[in-house]
Length: 435
Ligand code: SF4
Ligand code: SF4
Image (cartoon, rainbow, N blue to C red; front, side, top):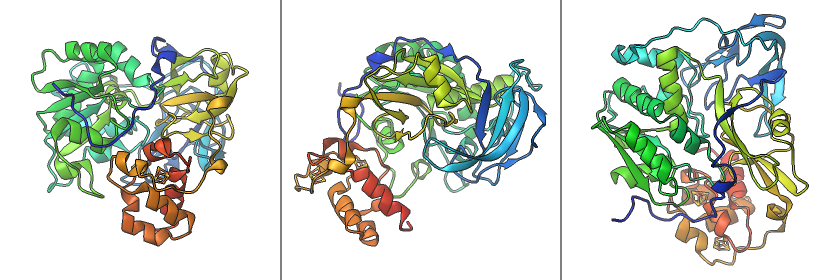
C-alpha cells in the first residue's frame, strides 16, 4: 500500500546516520545561561527579576507579554548578573536575562501529580500555560494558543509530528525511542484538553524502530494511530502532514484549525506530559549536534540559555574540515555568525557543515526558467517568479504570486540549477511588505 504523503517535495540525502545512534545524554551544566525573553512567536516576556537576585531552577523569570506569548523560567539555580540585549541564533538582539550558575541545581517547588489524567481540561491547560510550552519543532508558537481555538473552529484531530524530515536532525527520533510512553501520555493530555477523540502520530518510514516503539506505546489506545509516512522533504510541515494523514487541505493563508486539526511536535507532547505529571516547566530540550565538521556528534539534553560555544566544546570542538555552523537543519536553519548565542525552546539542532558543503550564495546565476522549483514547491507556488520580482525590488507584485503562502522550506533553492538564493529573496520581500 502507498504511504501517506503530499504533492511536490524533494529527496535530499538524510545524513541521519551521523547522530542517530547517540542516546540522549545530559549536557554538562554551563557556568552561565543567557535566557532570551523572546524565544517564541508573539509578544516578548517582561522580566520579573532584578540584577543580583538569587533564583532557583524552574523559577519564573519572565512573564508573558500578551496572549500570544509564554513565560520563561530559569534553567539553573544561581544569581541574575545582567538583564540586557544579547544576540540570538537569528542574528537579532533580544532582551535576555543572564544567570550565573551556582551548580547546586536547586529546584523551585514543583507540584507532582500522579493522577494528572483525572484533571479537568482547564486544569491541564493551566499547567501547559504555567510551564511556558511552545512548539519545539522550530516555529516556537505558544502551545496554549493552539489549545484555545475559537468556538467556531472546533478541533476533531490532533497530530503528533514525528516526521523529523530535516536532514541530519535526530532529536525527535531519539525521543521517540527513549520516551515513547511519555509522548503518548502527552498526546492523551492534548486530546483531553481539546475534547478530541482522534490522535495520529506521523513518522517518516526511514525510522522503522521509532514507528515500532510508538506503536507499542500506543497499543492500548484505540483512538491513537501511529502512521508511517513517505520519506520526503518537507513531510513534517504542518500542512503537508495534515494532507498526508487526513486528506484535508488547509486553505491558502489558513491555519490547521480551519480543517479542525492541531499539530504538535513530539518534543512538545513530552513537555506537555512533564508539565501535567510533574509541574515541570520547559527549561531544557534535546538538541542534535551533528554534521561532518563536529568531532563528537551527539543528542544532548541542553538547558535553555546554554551558549552554543559551550555545546561545541562539550562535543570535542570542530574538525579541520568545518566550514559553517547552522542553528537547526540544513533546509530551514539559520547560519550563525557567532557561537555566543543561546539555545532556546525552538533550537532543534546545531549543524556543522564541512567547507566543501558550504554554498556561496553570492555566486548565483539568472533564472533559466527550467521550472524545477515550480514542480516541487509543496505549496504549488512559483518560486521562480517570487525570486525574480524580489530581486528587482517589485515586492508588492510578489504578493500577486502568493508570497505569504511560502513557509520557507528551501526545497526550491535545493533544486535550482542556478543556485539562486530563492528563500532569501522571499524573506526580503516578506520583510518589506505587509500580508
Ligand atoms: S516557494 Fe516557499 S514553500 Fe515553495 S518550495 Fe520555495 S521555500 Fe518552499
Ligand atoms: S529552479 Fe531556478 S532556474 Fe529553474 S525556474 Fe526555478 S528559479 Fe529559475
